Length: 336
Image (cartoon, rainbow, N blue to C red; front, side, top):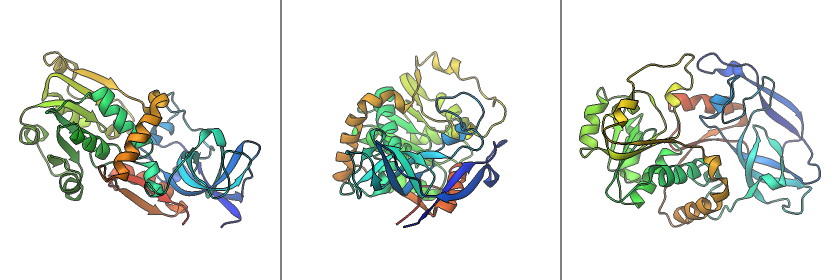
């Protein structure tokens, strides 16, 4: 184990798409836990699209980073020192920590993980925040019914891939949009999607939906926004439900994008559009964790992680989200 601690800091605010100049790696002493805290050796850290919003100097649902702040996100790791009677050295936990070799966490703010159910990276994906987002976003906001057609954008990502599988478990026809043939093949061949569209090689999204969802769209789970969403809105059935989870197509926009005005498209189908934040379901996280854990343990729910090696490559892993490098959850392996 390292005697020092490397840690990434937010160096400057980006204009448009972030680059490596936004990040600074510093090395210092290994931190020590105080009363009620634990020192965790980070095994894996999470990079997520919502972090782009934290780089802006504007109010949002996630507190913005100040220049000079240590970067934070989901981590899973091993307790190596404890000043709490809740955890001891050798325990595995997950929580919100820094992009570092070691991070100090309040013992009340972490959760234990069971490596027997799934590998550690899964606790940042299907068994973590993305999995819970998919679970509550689809079931509560989307309200899928047997026979519904569910369309998912960003379907090969950490959230979308779980959404589609849960929709299939609820007896739905599932159509996914993803950005490569490898991804669309994974959706249909491995995850059981009924159809998948490679949006990078498709010129007419509306025509593609006519083929993939000939009976229209009952539930749209939107992770992307942009022209895919514009096309889906023209295919909504009566009483359709739209769950707006993310808009990664616009996260790097400096101005407000313009396009087709969508509100008139909701009138005839009497469609419902709902934005969602997984934090609103915090009191029900146990419910989601139990059900997702059971599905993963029994092989009912498949998952995949794209692993970038080395803490030094964490910024590259984050930037790769915007070019679609990942299949499933994008994580960084910090230590063996």
